[in-house]
Length: 300
Image (cartoon, rainbow, N blue to C red; front, side, top):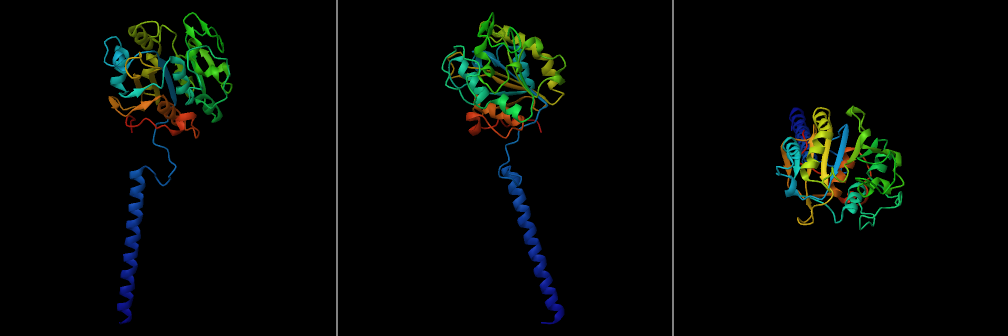
């Protein structure tokens, strides 16, 4: 073989090897995209990172009592303009253990609605995790007598719907009255819960009463959230005891695809996991560690 022929052959081999390496690299990149790995096997499923998240927990109504009901025009308008989870479920009965499940990934051994001893648990929870990560947190509790009050009940206020009081790693001062909910929504904490009182949350009063309360008291935030990268979540503690604990859960705001829905089965632990991941938290409380993120509803 002449020198020029050998040189040409070696060049062809080099080109072939380069083409093969390029194809392998492209395939690996494609696989990374398809599997959502993006080059890291530990990457979490994609959830949005809203500037503010407000979670409202209503009471004791099944999915069919609210979604599609003429008694709840405002919630249904949020469903139409946001996302609807058609297979969302509470964990148990009665009310109180569901609040602890949603807040801490565990019912914390609670089996009834009795008033708890403040700070009885040191378990991780959404607030303690957020605070440890340098995030801001607060709860806004309608009819709470005063900021940080650990009273069991007062008029239409009930501590059983405020699980943050059960944890010694959550400052009681972070439990505010609903009158302290800011008019300037940009000053809200990055993650917060709103607890309406026993009438406003549909526990003692009608679906219509609760729906109107949401419109009058959180409608302004909902509209603002739609254009300010923020999120409103409305869910329920449990159903009416007659529907397998299937509950309404609606999400609304700029990060949500309007008119979307998901028929995936989710529960309070999955919602907690999703809330943790919107805050970029590396830890997950209780059963949220093995739960799944809510997907399929987020705007690109």
